Image 1: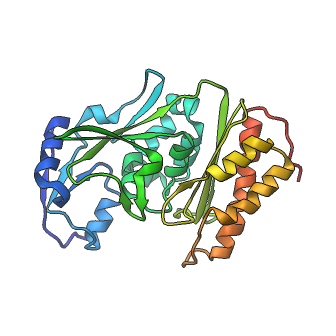
Image 2 (image 1 turned 180 degrees about the vertical axis):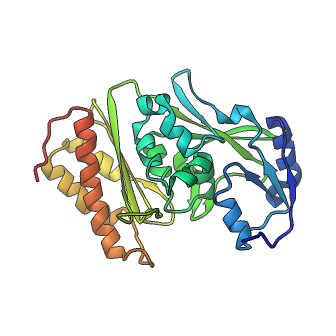
Length: 292
């Protein structure tokens, strides 16, 4: 299907040029990285921009590296790049796991993680891993650089904290100084590519801390401090996991749509939370406490 709308197109060769263009066109410009969401939106006439700023030629946005104890992932890093990165596998396996569940190989080869969090659809796969790892989103504009904690990034469905004159350059993730392990669970069709009907991310630490986040069960992805505090204060056991599962009903607000009912989403989120906890415990070598 051809795009039946007209718009300008420019491909800057440097980050500074891209920042200047975004400052010039403000909200009338959309940044093109992978384009898997943007192209579909334009085809459907949803938020058709005056100008497309294609940043694919800016090599500094393609980096995956560790700097001063922080894992940095650039705006052009695709989900396939994440799957191939030993740095990601060694330091943020939950993101590696989630990236492998994104759509299909063809989509993963094009779609970027930054584009995923900028589209901010409730069913995105990147959010839960970034939330449990307490990531920071880095933006740049003619006014300077800005940092936004990931928990403050998602304002509403398809709405983020980005300003009209900004573009996202990268995300930074602090590498924990204690032993840790994570796990990601996603409810989708048994075969073929599909959006997440619900997803859960868990990150456990050897000191007893636990981070838990949910996606596709509310207008925005959400980390639950309530569940985390329960597991931290009472310890991880069969009883506390069961208590946390019941607490999920007060944390998420799933809806009924063509892919699943709210009741099924709620039930499966509890199931996936338990599975994610068990997997993370096995990975961090905690005692196996759940029997089937």
